[in-house]
Image 1: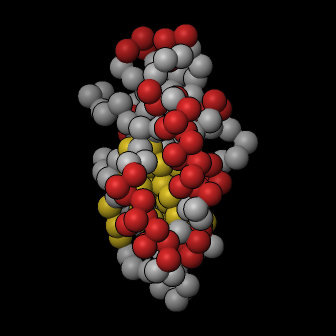
Image 2 (image 1 turned 90 degrees about the vertical axis):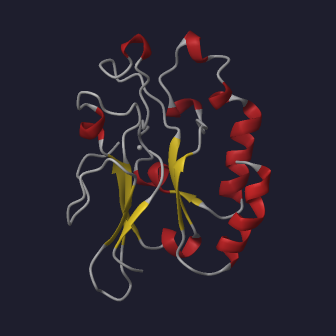
Length: 170
């Protein structure tokens, strides 16, 4: 949500191309996107200014793929190793997949590979993924974050983290 990134995001949005921006944005968009605890009340990830910047990105035309894929419940992407947050499922959603309007029309699914987070020695972030329809009918297009075991179909686990890896073509 760095102001310097606003012009590149705007240019990508105006290009008319299907664009996926995925990564660790370090922002918890809403109160529903984290397991509320007193220890997080002053956390920068929840700061109103940070949340306002994220809302501005969405208002500019980007779609939050994880929120769209699971509007009824939050998809946590991060569980700190502190205070046994993983075993208690006391996570938060700080990793995001943002889609341009063209990419958003192709959204078929998005989620989190929670099983990867549960592996001993795993990152405190779980890989996030998105599945987009290929308009030319040449098979699915997947974007995922590092650490995910890459197969030919997206995982069935729905739940959110960091740089994007790409397979297929749009």
